[in-house]
Amino acid sequence: MRIDTRNFLELKGDLVYLKKLDPEYADEYWSNFDDCSIEAMIFTGTQQIFSKSDITTYLEDICSDRSRIDFLIFSKESNKAVGEVVINDIYRNNRSANMRIIIYRKEEFNKGYGSESIILALNYGFGMLNLHRIELEAFVFNERAIHVYEKIGFKKEGIKRDGWFYNHKYYDMITMSILEDEFREKYIHSQVSLDEFNN
Image 1 (cartoon, rainbow, N blue to C red):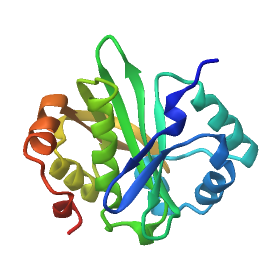
Image 2: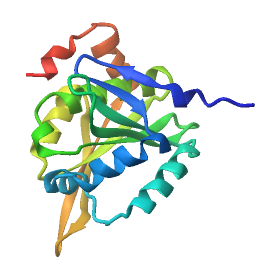
Image 3: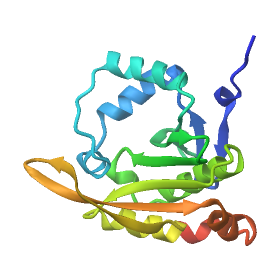
Image 4: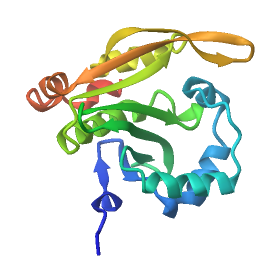
């Protein structure tokens, strides 16, 4: 019998801990997704409407997808799920991947949850998945997120013109990335404190 050790993953920080998202969390995931704030939906580009059965099928599918790993973000203070962070589009030959994150509710913004979750996921991606490059995209109007990504260590690479359509209008998207050596220089070799991202 083959045991998927990813099922036992738990990454711990000072403010949050990450647990691998699987069907065990279907009810909790649906509850949070259904209660997601409009700001979170817009900033992440979510345009579709999902049913609970869609969510269950989705969770079953991602568990068998070897090109991604999805984490639920839990607040250490409340032990409740506050968001999710995903490493997806993993290309083993290029040692590259994409990343996305969502904090479900506006009242959980600006608490340091997102920054710490990204750093934990990056540490896993570079340290355990042996990735070389991780990229993400941000909408040009999401200045808060862009600032956070730059503070973490992501660098702007370019603009995807008219990359997203919403409510009769196209918006540009900014592509950003971080390389393994850049991450290690900032977080592994220097042992930077996560406290600076919580202010």
